[in-house]
Length: 234
Image 1 (cartoon, rainbow, N blue to C red):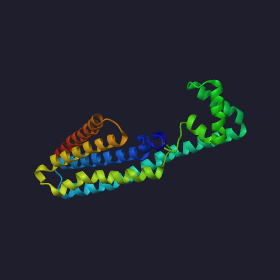
Image 2 (cartoon, rainbow, N blue to C red; image 1 turned 120 degrees about the horizontal axis):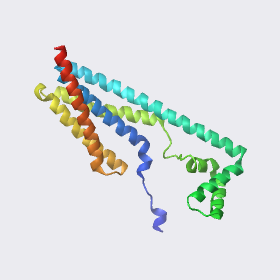
Image 3 (cartoon, helix red, strand yellow; image 1 turned 30 degrees about the vertical axis):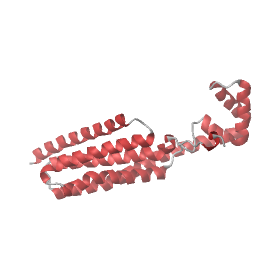
Image 4 (cartoon, rainbow, N blue to C red; image 1 turned 180 degrees about the horizontal axis):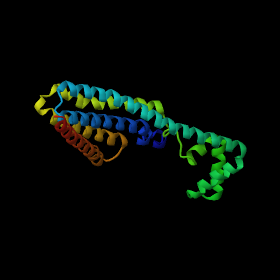
């Protein structure tokens, strides 16, 4: 049997929907919770106060991420459905014009007029709506919006990410709590960046550097704010 008949390719684009939501959720969970813990700890709060703040941030953040992803991706899904409905009407009302539209799109990609017409005819006969969705609107089954999947991925990964710095608080001595949270969080961010790059088929270096840089910046800013707030209150 020819290798062409047994060769199956797995592309990173097939994972882009849930991967984006998962990476965003985990990254936000680590950065926001670690930053909050560092900021509260810098204000000379007690360990119990830091834990309460961290737990509250975990649940609030997970729900916020889920709701935000669901609303955002639902809006994208509504737009896709509206575009498909319009294409469906146009195909029913003016099929010849729609076939000519496909022909010209294929011509613009370098296909000769005669061949483009044949391709447009065959694609229209097979599944006209799918052809226009893919070639005119840029929509496909792989890239289609899935609100529930995105919301669930964001909530679960936010919870997992937020748990890492939060677990450090009760397990570390008070004198090293802040640096311990920062170090563990940065290590988790580096691992997350590497996993995200691996899953998406991208270079590791830029991805790891990106997430750790913003993690350091966020924790540094909240530490300064916490220290200033603690000084003023004290």
